[in-house]
Image (cartoon, rainbow, N blue to C red):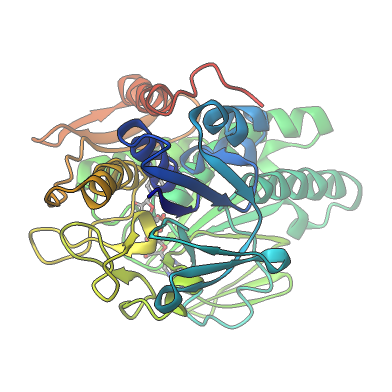
Length: 392
Ligand code: NAD
């Protein structure tokens, strides 16, 4: 009898899991349903581009009906409201319930605010195309307002967090600023663009020379770094730093960290303290073997006993692996342990610059070569999901 596989989330992990499962399993063997909040697969790693107006939405979101439609995968667009692993069921908005034989949870992560007072209420995040559009529209509104009022807070922009998300965003904003200012007749020198980082350096985990290279490249384009300065409070219009300094601004974009998805944390699946699911070497929940949890929703431990950074690359590989494990579960066969093969990390520093570490030896790359490699990795992903010629 045909089994029902339900995949929650059509990000890097969920989309790849559904596609790989379909490649391996006939429609008679398994019905596959993908549930996603929006009708698009969003290229989350590229969101800094629309946030700064560098590309249109269609470059970062691919319609799911076109990616999945001809593949005999059912699509349900809406919210997941509860995961009930003990009942083998998930609840969806509008009162729908789906029962499953196998569940793949790939709902991504949520923003971590670390309990900082006022931060959630008074900041932007960059986790969806809608978020990116909100940021771009807000920045343009602030600059327009500054032109009329000359209120300094309108021309002051703060990115909270100097990890990869914060750095890629601040780089893109730095490159967009001269164009915005020229259009509105504002002096670029009037605009302040801050990146506030709690740790002594930006890009924690990157080698010193690449961090220095990134910092210099961004400073030359007008970014001011405040490092070793945790944000401790955020009011409407004021960022408070630990040393007592205050920055008056109408724009705080918070990229200070991620935590597991609250639906997963509240589901009854085994989770760790940041709400990410605990999984075994086959990517099954340690508490429920018919549930696979992948991507940012789970925590994958590296050989050194520390969690792997939750990247798109890891998520896509987990997705492909789960597709194959579903074949073993449904058609019979033994499960294979997951072995990630990470090709490196690349961080863009605006339109023409980037840094990264690639290959097993973590060879350092910088400048245009790194930027091309980053574009190459996006194209490889699009080719992988059949999305090279799919546009909204
Ligand atoms: P992150 O956790 O990697 O970085 C957040 C940064 O915010 C850290 O440097 C942290 O010290 C800082 N921070 C935390 N609290 C703060 C405070 N109170 N005040 C000031 N700074 C504070 O988060 P991220 O950058 O969103 O990345 C999330 C994950 O996604 C990471 O694993 C990252 O590797 C991955 N990612 C990868 C890419 C890429 O490969 N190009 C791009 C974006 C994100």
